[in-house]
Length: 518
Image 1 (cartoon, rainbow, N blue to C red):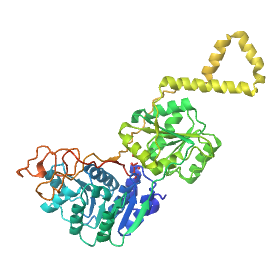
Image 2: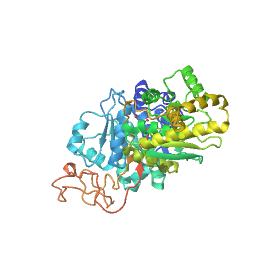
Image 3: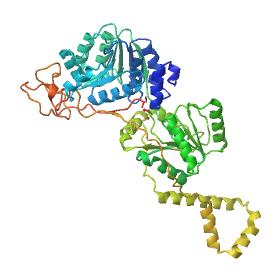
């Protein structure tokens, strides 16, 4: 996989990605971004969790002309949740380029959206029904659109949006770039692509499946502020020979390695800002056992071939399934067993489920160890070391000293004192880490975003048919006196009953550090 730097992106976008904690592109991003930057139409077929938002978002942002105060890019998504989260992601990517992205969806006051549109956003992320509503009101004009993205095209098809999509496609200038992303390619999507895309390049990426049976994979649900203490307890209980701790950002790696040393552990960090000489020095110390803990970002650990790593701790959940597979593959090598432990905050559980779904491996949940368990674990390790020395029978030169101590002290008290001295008791030195924002999965609700029951259309916001779902219009009237724009339930909701849009959709960077996924 390439780094974002290797993809030749602008300084502003690279700065944004670095600030978000991303260095390495996922496979779909590595393949898609150069094609999209070249202005070609493309069809991207990839499962959820592969980094599609950045794959289309980065090239779109790179191509925006800041001298033109018009909407130049549109992303169509099937649900309001996706619209909001994609817009959030694009705003982060465009933060240093001055590029603004606005989500447009039903269920939100349309007057408020019209006010936001007057501030001239560069990109719109919209659900089909509400976008058509704005087009019919002339509050969104399509004559300056240079890039159109159809995100989750198969999902929009399943939810009955094909007519709305075609209507929008017909109104956007023919001289445009169209990027279509879909997990599957049903016949209607293929037909759509043949009619509206120009000689598209097809890019297909399958998420990797974890095929590492020698690795025990577990996770612990823990609050962000408690992660460090929990990790220290695990280190005391498990006493790993060599351990790699993965952090999401360079700042995280620096803070973690410093904090571990304050607590009495031997740790060093590596990330993209280190010189090659410093990186080589740290890796040499780790391989030789001079340091026990290596703290690393995903990019810094790329290509590491270190034997003897017994444990991998994902201090921050990885941005995407590929990163997860890459991380845990550092252990369990050469037929040896390994342990991979992932820390998950309560708001990141959906992201964890997405990784499990794509990698087709379930992680077992383990309870967070208590302080008492950490103390008992450290004591057990000391006893094991003491018994090991006895079995090796290489302590004869200490006989005379031992006999003298026994003449002057109680034997039980003497052994207890030795155990206390040798045991590394939990260190409670106060540690303060900068909190990282949680990675959040693009989560579909059990209702569709843009559909409602059959009835007369107003401004394109009422597609035909009953599409099911689980959310009701609130406060709306059937007599047309109060239009969809001022309903609390909104234009893009469906009445309860019927089908389910289903599924969970990941955050593509993850913070796509996702702080990378993408």
